[in-house]
Length: 386
Image 1 (cartoon, rainbow, N blue to C red):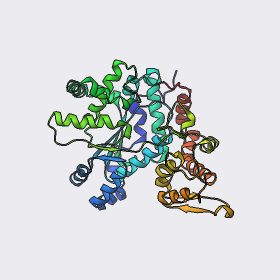
Image 2 (tube, helix red, strand yellow):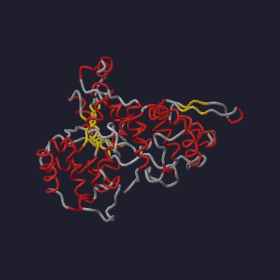
Image 3 (cartoon, one colour):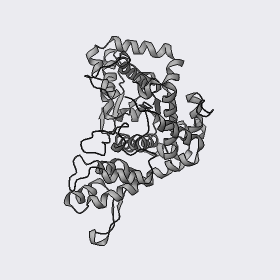
Image 4 (cartoon, rainbow, N blue to C red):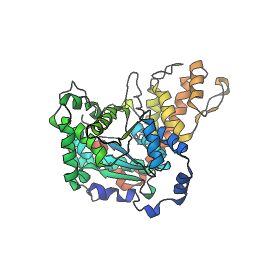
């Protein structure tokens, strides 16, 4: 039988992780946001996305609405890799610093529909709580209710009369081939043998955007098709204000030719609670051809993880190999790497050191906190299913 901490309702289990009282918001943070110019806010929010649909709409939103609502959803489907952990924390903190409210949609029902954790909802919800523990340890900005964790199963059940008519209307207005084009959002392809539940999934995810009253869809590039579906739905119902799509970059796997990380392939990514030695081995084995920038995952880690986190990338090396050097921009790293002045033999140890420094607070949290440690033990024992 599971212990009390893990047997709580999902919403009860996360109450201690986010402060919902607006009166407890940081005055200094609030003042800083108020002091920002519109151009500064736009620059910060826009920097989150590799693509924005559409930039003029984003500008107008930030100009007219003091606290825009951003939505980011995720399936609790296994251990958290560094993109989901660090990149999401960076992006959420950018958005809240610019005055946005972020609704984190814990898509437990969606994970069940997509057969994650073998469709076992209790396991899925345990994974969800584990994910929140990581963001908490990393320093996601949870003060003052700027970030709100919402469990899809609870929210949909509590407002079923609002949710299901919306799903039905979206389904009614779209042909099956249009919905099939969205199955990429589940990590599927149109050629896969899909269940009826997986056909329902895109209609539900599209409905989430309106159900959560989201102004901005802040999801990965792999979710783009369903976000476009939401904008098309606005055309169908003659709704003027469309959700803005702010799609973030997808970090590739560590091996050659891996377009994205895979939770089912541990060698493809760094997991948030990987030990120092595991990180060192994975980076040492990672694809990193000398002087080749294109398709180089180690350089992507520096660009999207290390530089945004530390605002620099420090390489320590002997004098005969050029001596220590601190890079402040990715362009500087690329220039030295292309020329051969920065060799993989020096880049990789520096990358490992930086990643381990980021991950250490997470390791400490899971070592010291009994509840977090128990959650991790359970999640590691679960079989990852597609």
